[in-house]
Length: 327
Image (tube, rainbow, N blue to C red):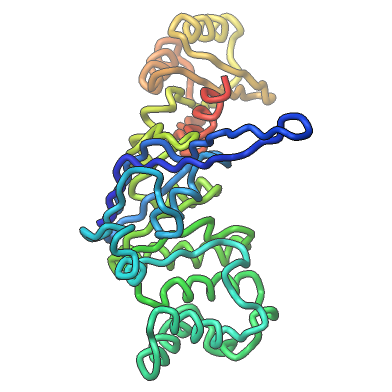
């Protein structure tokens, strides 16, 4: 298990004041963050740009030393036993970084494998196994600069798995990929956690991807933890708006007026769209209004042609957080 306690990272910046003077300013990128990652689970780390996500990942990956706080990985101190810990972790970034384009895919894996002390038959078998897993065997001896975006990202995944880590840090792994390629990579990430028991920390701006993959989420803002929990629990605790869509036949105006008046009395907001012989209502309320609306329709003897509930999504929760933070 990875366990981070009270993580703090401060940077000291020097800013020009006038022509000759400089003023020091302290920026707190991460402020008192607690975080855990178990083997076999996918944990999401969310926040707007500048929230502290990349700084947090770099500290967990032993690339940055915390100003204060502790990080333990399987009981080992990340600062005192970093060489042992590096064998247990790896990081995969989205886009086209962290690869040598003039080398072939095979040569890249040879190089990165050697950094972890792999050599000979052990390294060769590992490379061949991983290339087979991501369907890159035929392109193994092609220079990376001739790879497509999807091929480069699959090679990134392999590079991150070359040392068979227990924990993976994925920073925007599907950035810029076509939908079919991104879907394949999501499936691979899921299998790594659930079939190979790897602990995964994921950052992504694609909220549907996060909602689909993650067992738990941490939402941070300016380095501080705002919310932690399952996607479902976080959505329920943040989004207090329920939406319902109904379609009814065109009926007497007096009945429509009574129905709409009753909606207002029940604190249900609505938008109405007349569609010839039908009327569509988009309903919003701060409570689950389904039973209330059905009761009113029955009361006024209004036939239902269509009823559809709109479940709140993670995107709704993040937008609400963003509005609250900027208010």
